[in-house]
Length: 236
Image (cartoon, rainbow, N blue to C red):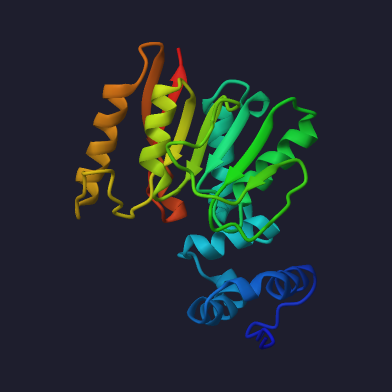
């Protein structure tokens, strides 16, 4: 494996954490990602518009300023939106190969002494263990058992989005999903227009949600360069 370059002469703890991460997980990425990985991870401290892949690694390693960390912003949104959020049994769908949000929630729960639990599920997981969390390396599907969860969450969970929306509605779970810009099909429904896809999701939730829930739509702030809508279901 090629040695990481260091174009900005980063030193200290940040460089140590990046290098350790690369040695442990670099082999899981294909050649194109590995090339970009080496470039971005050591240059992107000075960039503001990064792919989620790199942001998730930065956030997981906690080497990005909080003002740039959209995962920590989303955690604060969840704590402010869902009553006693950290006491819930939470399932993060499409948590990604490096589950930064799951890690931050687990850390918060441990610090609080919470009775809540956090589980991350994704078929692309490369991290196998997070203290205080459960990780499940598989696709989130319609037959996935969510009976133990109070709340389903996801930050840009891609294909898991329509499944999470339906299962949350049908099984009466609270939910907050930040919807990515990927144009995924939903059964027989497919569009190349993002607005039409969002409208499909809105209609899906309004049609299938229980009458004892509230449906709300918010948005990731502009300063994170990801103006994703957030679809939220809460109990009345």
